[in-house]
Length: 71
Image (tube, rainbow, N blue to C red; front, side):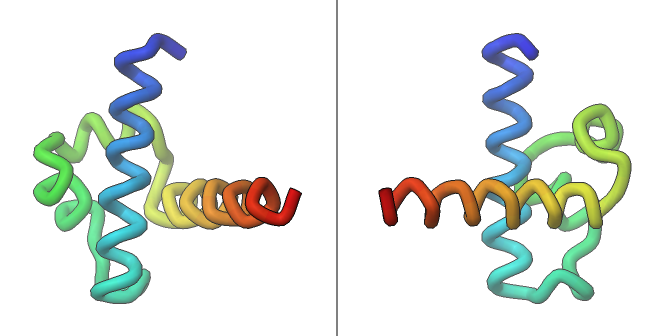
């Protein structure tokens, strides 16, 4: 993955995390994530198959951060 692609993916995860926290996972749509990240839906689907995949990536990233803090 290129640096730009990695940065875009991280931006999408940051935005999704914020929206999941404030609106809940069920009430957050792919359109919400696209709008808040200033990206198109097509861009989101380039990186993630669906909302569950984004959610799983957010959880994985948060879990990794927690483990790093404990080490």
